[in-house]
Amino acid sequence: MLSIYPACFFKEDNGYSVIFPDLNWLATCGKSERDAMSMAVECLAGYLFSLERDGEQFPEPSAICDISIEDIAKELDVESENSFVSMVAVDVSDYARNHFEKSVRKTLTIPAWLNTAASEKHINFSHTLQEALIAKLKS
Image (cartoon, rainbow, N blue to C red):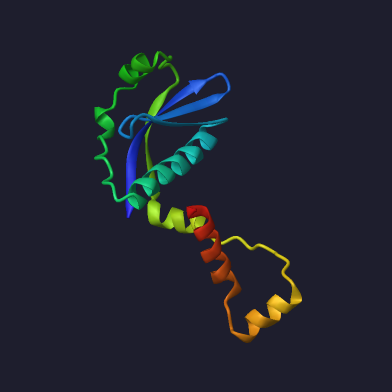
């Protein structure tokens, strides 16, 4: 499902700051307009993914016409010149699958006798390592 929120892009000397007024003033930045948009998508995806994971409802997004870049700039005490509001869209499930939940290959070394014993019992090494790491992180 596509989630779309307005974001305020403020031009600065070294790039752009990005603020999501509907999301507790969630903020990110980028070195260029393109980089700032990419960072905004990543930031939005991470925030909404966290809400989803914690079982919280997504806030209702404002209509772009209800966002005043001048009012937000005044509240943040920044210049509104060369700034703009843009809708930022992300499919949280798809983004999470491709960025947050993707598997990473790890190489490890174990004693030969342990490898043989585990292989004989058809133990799934990846699954076992994941379970052990999760258990270790919870302790």
